[in-house]
Length: 76
Image (cartoon, rainbow, N blue to C red; front, side, top):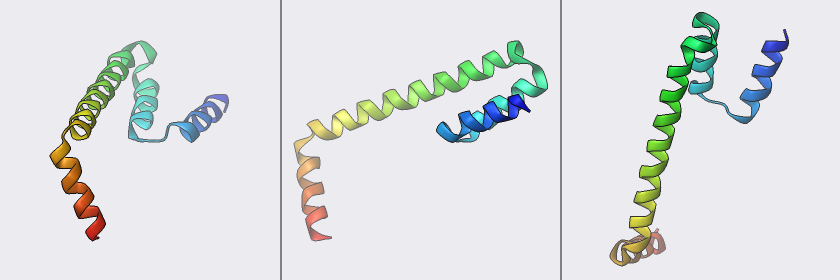
């Protein structure tokens, strides 16, 4: 019961399929065998975050894109 309450507490801050998949993997295979899955999920989040950061930086530095988006936004 304590494990379930800890899981509910964690899910209230970090909901999502990755958390559920990590829990199921831990239950089925144990903590040691689920570490590669968790590291893979962490790596994926880092890659997606880095790509989003690079894209956001590119958008902000591209004056033409910013101008076009201002015009489009003001028309809507």
